[in-house]
Length: 50
Image (cartoon, rainbow, N blue to C red):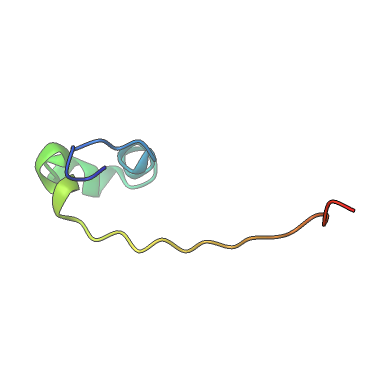
């Protein structure tokens, strides 16, 4: 997604809303493809299907 410059996860929107000072200093269209994203995923199984 980064190679296509597609922010489908809304990272830019979160950054703009929560960190306005940082957002103002960035050229998001240029910087997005360069950032390193390290996902942290947690899974909670509610039922087993039985």
